[in-house]
Length: 247
Image 1 (cartoon, one colour):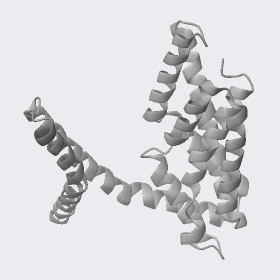
Image 2: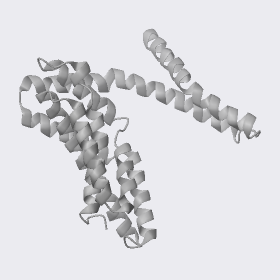
Image 3: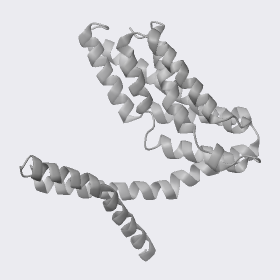
Image 4: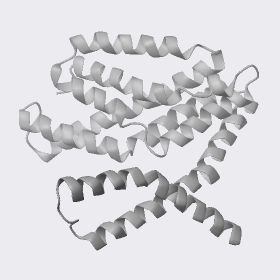
């Protein structure tokens, strides 16, 4: 128990250090630039303490649970030697962690609201719900495909820079032909897919695979899955809008 308290105390100190620049900037502009007192100071301080405690617990949970779990699963799949099972797991991991991502839900809901106001879809709750749901499904499938592609890269030893450069060249070309209304949504979709659950699990999966596979360097081959998870949603959403599924 004593060791646990000491460890958690260290996490609290680290969380305070990480949040200090943000707090300093907000305090400076509120007090010096705006020259106004903080509204509901007691509630703000209480919320800040909750953020510090939550961040400390989250970091501890990553190091104690998600990182070891992801690496253990990856190494187990590598020992099993079943590529189809590994690809199925990679796809399900990418899809499952993305479809419920709060940031993606928020972007999809906002995009549906704006599309409804612009007349691109019907001005009713059912149309907006269907629009947001379809967008979430497209993005979730794209992330599943991205993780499969990243795992295949690790297995084959393909250089990551060629795939990333080729992907963004494809994005640039698709942007020219895609409807203007969905370009911004597509780019934002690529940015909201890397959640607090997806990132540690996917990163641990890549590092674990690169560690378990002979001839792979975890530092060179283990990272890069997150880059695919940010790239493929742009491609899929642009394709979805260009092919007419957007409206």
